[in-house]
Length: 77
Image (cartoon, rainbow, N blue to C red):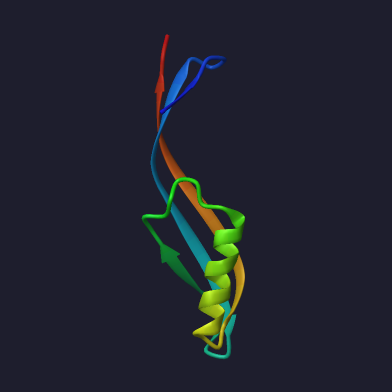
C-alpha cells in the first residue's frame, strides 16, 4: 500500500500483466500474447528476456510489449 500525501489518496497494487505482440510468417498482422500474474516489480530486463525466449521457441519476432498495472485507489478527504 502506498500513501500519497499530496493528493490524499491510498493506492493498493492489485495485479500486473504483460501483453506482447509478435509478427511473423503466420502472423503478418501480429498476434498478441498475454501473461498475467506478473510480479509487481517486473523490470525492463525481465520483459526483454521473456521476449527473447518467445522468439527462440517461435518463428515470430516480438514487435511490442506493454506492461499493465492495476491499482485500487481510495481517496481520503
